[in-house]
Amino acid sequence: MTLEFDASQLQAYFVCGTQDVGDRDLEAVLQAALTAGITAFQYRDKGTSRLTAAERLSLGLRLRDRCHQAGVPFIVDDDVTLALLLEADGLHVGQKDDRIVDVLNRVNGRLFVGLSCSTLAEVRAANQIAGLAYLGSGPIFPTSSKADADPVVGLAGLQQLVAASTRPIVAIGGITEDQLAPIAATGAAGSAVISMIAQSPDIAQTVALMRRAAQ
Ligand code: TZP
Ligand code: MG
Image (cartoon, rainbow, N blue to C red; front, side, top):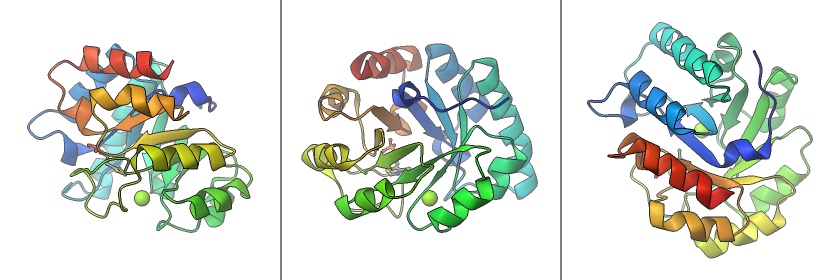
């Protein structure tokens, strides 16, 4: 199954890997988030994760199947080979990952592709690239979930990126519940979060707030 990209999938976008859930079980956290109504899931296995390639593949298959049972797109971070093996719906890449044009050539239309852009120059360059589905911009606020995060963009910066982009933008980085409305006011299509969902005491309420703010 391959879900086509739609900008409404950016409304409540959950990013997570085993490194982000502490003592919780990633599959259980994802299932709670799916039941609560997340609109996209990105599998991002990074940093302190100690999974082997084989473990990443078998866990990825289970995560993908849960997303597909819920009709939610399954997106893989960075790893083109893993995304193709898992028959993911989407792939998300950063500026430092394999060059975006090479990525698009390898993917060859089998998955939709999102690109991280945190500066006006990156957004303008992305506007010139055919075949990108969406942009991810951030960190909007300071975050401890990404070791090599770019400088903070802020709400005013996000608004400039949204205005310059020909593609829908999902905001990411340090987003808390009280910032969902100001992010929506910039024209961003939605918010992508790790800790707000992975560490939420009430995932159903957190996801409902995300969806409501983005609609
Ligand atoms: N890219 C930019 S900031 C970030 C990523 C993956 C981390 C977002 O995590 P959190 O916990 O929502 O700040
Ligand atoms: Mg990356």
